[in-house]
Image (cartoon, rainbow, N blue to C red):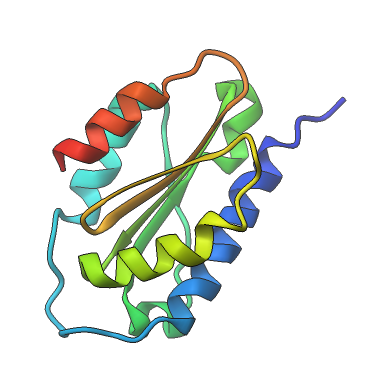
Length: 137
């Protein structure tokens, strides 16, 4: 039976993209860690490889700087991870409010500053390490 984990990553991406497009922009200058730094830190904490997701122009204009997921390998990884790097903490706060109600019950929303992660374990739970990595960004 095929694992539902890849679908969760896609659902999280759709929710975050829709939420970002509904959120007002702050300043034009991005703050927080670079998308590459966030990606590398979360990959290390979760023990997996993330793949960049194309960010629609409208979502980018509204503050979504980058998005990464392991949707293609989530079943093998025994965890689903979606990472969103936003332009500002204010945009991230608004997106987190909108995304929180739409994530699967087994998923955890981890947010700090401009980085937001939707994490769903399906085996070894590395949520503590992921949460610590996000907090350190």
